[in-house]
Length: 418
Image 1 (cartoon, rainbow, N blue to C red):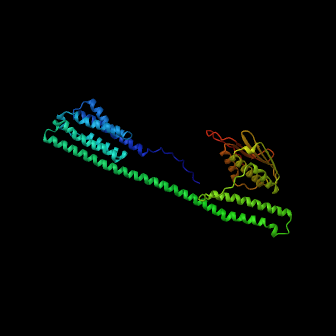
Image 2: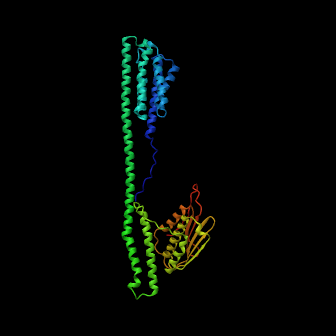
Image 3: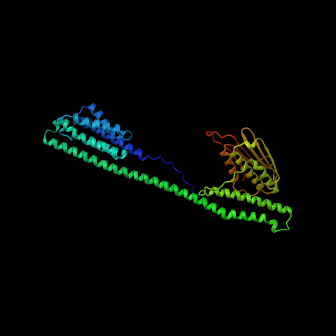
């Protein structure tokens, strides 16, 4: 048999959102590093003002991710001030009122606003940017005094507004596509969840149908045959009749349990009446049933067991029932003792059987012991099961009467023999 190669754990991938924010930050840094020298050298703006205004302008796309209104204010202030702080002789030789880095920042800012916050909020920087483009020539008329400079300024404003408007439309369409895709993903997840739930309900219904049609029918036949045995077979004695009556009573109890289980499995039928679960007061009747089957069982119940919570009572009965069943199945003929003791803090259950001379029966994989341990763990108690010094077997469980502390992790030890 070929050995499997050890699985190499891969480093977690960067999420799409993190990668997008990192790319946006890199673009803003690049635009800032280009805008500052261009604004200082080509337009004659002082270096400190270029740093401050460029930082406000290029930082607005990043700020728009979390604070869109502050981002709009910072962008408008810097976009309004930068075209005014230029040397006229230098501004006529370069694109004005929008330099190329400022134009790209404007387009990027409009796209981020429209994509992240919708078309209504994304339209604000687009309209404000277009209006600011018109105010700059009105406040600095000397820059557009000649026909060539006026034409260059007009072309610059038209190109900037057109590119920003195109980015606005693209961002709105992409954002809509992303929202539709996310909605479809949620719908698919919801459909898959509903499909799994429907499959679970169908499987439970199928199991309930099989139990009803096969097991419950067989138990009904056993109950009817045992109940009518004294009438169909008049030659049988009183002892055999009593034994058949006991079998019929056990079959009726099993049918009651089966109906309760079917009511739980058929989740679509919420009108099923569930009978009350057995508790510690039913253990003597359980022991009497075992005695009638020929098993020597001793019973000792001490303490105020009736004051225990219902969950503890049910668990105590089920543990005693399963332990007695295991003793009868795996230690046939050995005497069994059942001790139930209640104190101020917990209820203890001990089921011990002696050594048997019969060969051990085949085990069923330890599911009974596992079920008992799970019941005890759910209540925060302790559970042990294993051989004892005299060659027998003992099952011991301690069920606390108070709710366990949720900060503690209940532990249980289990010893099983193959």
